[in-house]
Length: 221
Image (tube, rainbow, N blue to C red; front, side, top):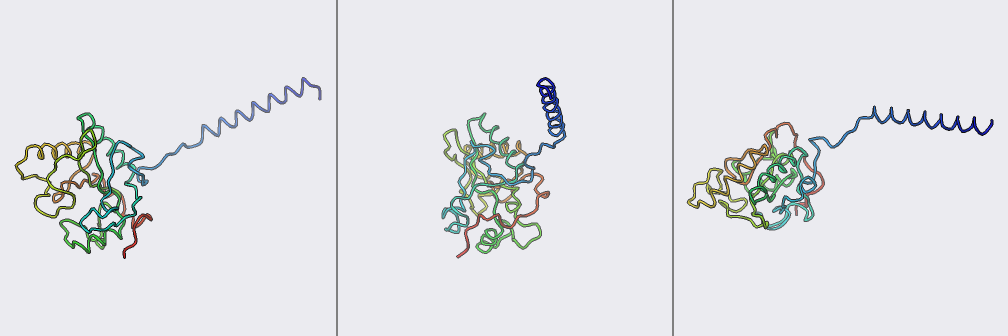
């Protein structure tokens, strides 16, 4: 084969390969993570602060229930809604801090054993279980522009009437802070829990099944 014919054949072969490749690329389905996939909240919005209380002794059980390096995880759609709430607050000089997110069923069982009160902790043996175990709920508080927690009705896991979602105290500052948090979370597609001002769940939480364990739990002693 003469050099000119060889060049023509090479050009034709490259053109065919390019055409076939373009067809494959065009026909391929480009997929990303689904809304139900578990993600680290910080990977969706790094500005959201995280202090998982059950990864430390700073909770009512006085011992960690999670590994110290456990990330705050929720379903992807839930994390995106938190980002919406965060942006809402940032425009007003505030932000979110996460106290709890996904909670393994074994940790839920330990909390139920410690409290045993349906008003505050869901029985892990119930058909519904905890919205935290579904990755569809978070416990949050409000922080200022410097990341400092602002005055709220109570501390985390305060099992008294003072922790009700409808604040009955006399402080206008606390009332204003709570209303701002509630407004931001509602803006993101969450609603609150009557007995815990810090607890918010995604409006479509029923669409996500409970996930017993994703290998992030500290083994019970």
